[in-house]
Image (cartoon, rainbow, N blue to C red; front, top):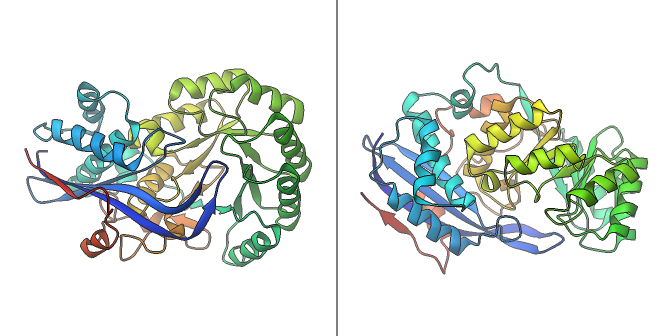
Length: 378
């Protein structure tokens, strides 16, 4: 496969409402879409979003590193999926978001050229599961409004929930964990701290969660706090999920060996693309660790579909899929990937490649005022 053109679209898309997290309040998605065109005129799409508190990359840095990586490899020949990473490593160190954006677009092209859905190219021998459960985020900080939100979605079939904690006082978080766990008994509930908890707050929330049947507590401490997470698990009995701590397979092995995490939240931008995320997921499953798949707040259907394809290829996403295009005021696709009955279903991903592509007018509507469209050719 030979590339004839690359187009980079930096976007800023408003959310339906602000999402309050422990380290930031997000009002707009800042994300880069990459379109690669092959010698036969086919297009492949990739995406990576700004995540300075997770990957250290801003929209500006992702634009620059993706433009550099793509420009350096415009004349390269891409014959197989396995050949992508070695070529990337020859021209750029680190920069997992840029590599993910570039790799997704190339993988979309390769699958389209083969005429198969991407998840079937990732795992050709797989009999795909029927559905992947959607993990919905409860992040207003108000128990009453979150109960109203959850009951409305529960009527649509949602059964997996993530309570954002760490942005307010620990007593309020404990109240929300207990109240939501009681009201949604029988569902899978988790709490996500995004690294923000003190040891005292973590213990209070962990004990409340363990008593209330919380499935897991995600990333209570900053990345690298392996011994502290292991101690919290031993002292409280709460199951822990590592997110910001996981930037590669060595991190998975370290957390598993120490008993610091019994599951992992995987994101494409952390691991560098579809194939590294698939490999990380398989490593977790081999060691009995459970999986959550997640998009950064907030990504478009391009990244949502890419992540879903990995989920179907892995075929064991016990802790659900946090798909974030649902929080955008508008998507870049006319028919966005959307949950059906609280889940993504295999039949939604049966078209070749990713199965989704943006509309030109949507890309213009949400173009960044700071970072401009770029076009590269060999």
